Image (cartoon, rainbow, N blue to C red; front, side, top):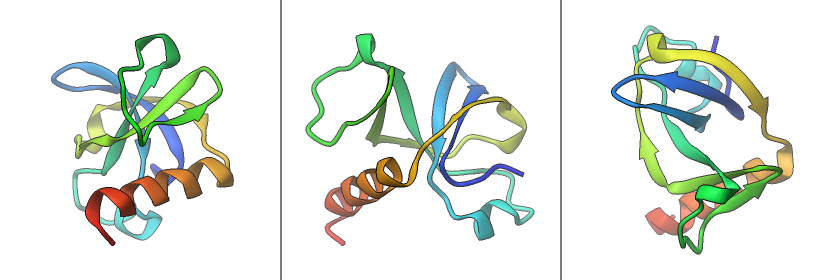
Length: 97
């Protein structure tokens, strides 16, 4: 099962990395999609005041997508609690929650 906080390689319309942001309850259902925030290598970072750094990666909370579960090919990393708190804060700012 895909879990919140995991970073996966996604091979869909285009290959990319995505941080799973949907809840584990949602992810465990038969719904065929998972919500992710795009993850880029730091060298590919574009200006974004909400970007969250995570080692060699940067999570982009303003680049959201819902790829098919079947497109997830490899778990490459897992975000720590602090990173997930910062991503959650950025998502709340984006949505005025």
